[in-house]
Length: 221
Image (tube, rainbow, N blue to C red; front, side, top):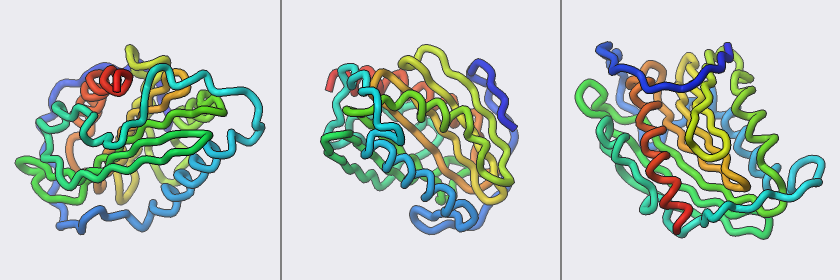
């Protein structure tokens, strides 16, 4: 199911998620690893080759810069109210077609979400040769392509030129992803967890709040 509707913060949920067995550091769920890997490889190839058509230039990075350490540049205060962020790892891709900064963190829940097995992955991609807009919209609005998944897509106002919040629930995993397009810049923040882990509405609210604080900083960097 792919329902599009304006995004609005939600009231806190009183539901307590069921306990889950401990997970290893940065666990990838076997049932979805193939689909996720294929999506990442396809997206990287599209960005580096300039898209299948190879026509049309990028609208420019709109003042954003992919710094050397995205983990240090980002604001995560809202998410830190829900989780303890651990083991930050930053990386940077430099290429004539695109620059991309990435940050990967482990999340340790507070209270009933104390077990590990959750991750926060963020990235800022600056496209130099191709317009990321068409692929950006296709990936967000067509996010229900994964088999046996329940997906909800919501537009978010006030972030860049266009922004989407996508929640995908599968049998073994849950993905909550905020994607923002601003000119030739694409910012993505994704929380990955085991199915039923954490409060998805609170996570979504935190991702949006942190992005509103982070994007102006990345534009000045």
